[in-house]
Image 1 (cartoon, rainbow, N blue to C red):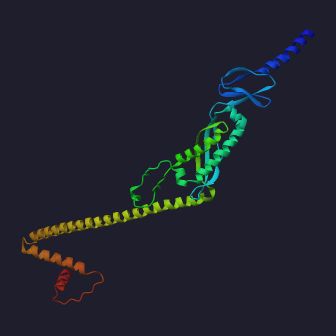
Image 2 (tube, rainbow, N blue to C red; image 1 turned 90 degrees about the horizontal axis):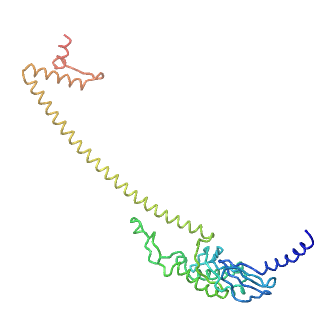
Image 3 (cartoon, one colour; image 1 turned 180 degrees about the horizontal axis):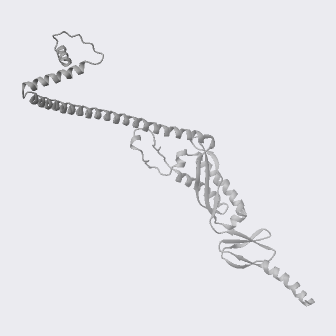
Length: 315
């Protein structure tokens, strides 16, 4: 490359730098404020495209046009009924007045810090003005489903509320919106993300919840034991009735059988005198077999029927 080539490059390089510093592009998701020596000049540029500025003297400051998220830190705060809870909130916001926003805050980091201060303070004030149930509940006329067995017990009933969580959130929104407008910020909404008991009282709350559940369980166990005793009593009564009826039927059947057997014996042994004597002899032997065993001692006279019977058997 000759000296003319170097000369051309030496002339074009500054021109390229000047051109690079003179032109800038505005995206659809942003708006631009041009500052000169640190002070804004001109109008806010919000339409997208390629733009021109004075190089080196003027500076491009880009500001978001999109909706932005604020996610606050979880903080401990007291309620009206002196319960410490941990509240975690979030909100959505956007830059409504870019020039005012730039003059007061300059960048998004400062804006997030200001949002934390204002929204955190208003959340603390709103929580301190309401009882815990007002912050948690949303529906005023909600009726819980209660087990029929627990209707008479003071368990599972909801305390009435006058405002509710949505109204508390609206109070925070109304109080913070005006303050944020001074910084060119429009607050779109703010909501509770999570509400929990403070760690210092959480165990006490859990113990109370366990106690309530134990009361419910004990009530069910007591009613179950009563029902079991009732069922067992009915079973025993029914069993006795069945056994009594069965015993009556058994006795009736046995009576009929004995009567029938007696009738058969009578008709059999009354056919002749010899049959009657045989029947008498058999019944006598059955009687002796019943009353006499190996350890029985008999004292008989010679005119005793048993003696004569045994004497006849021996001959």
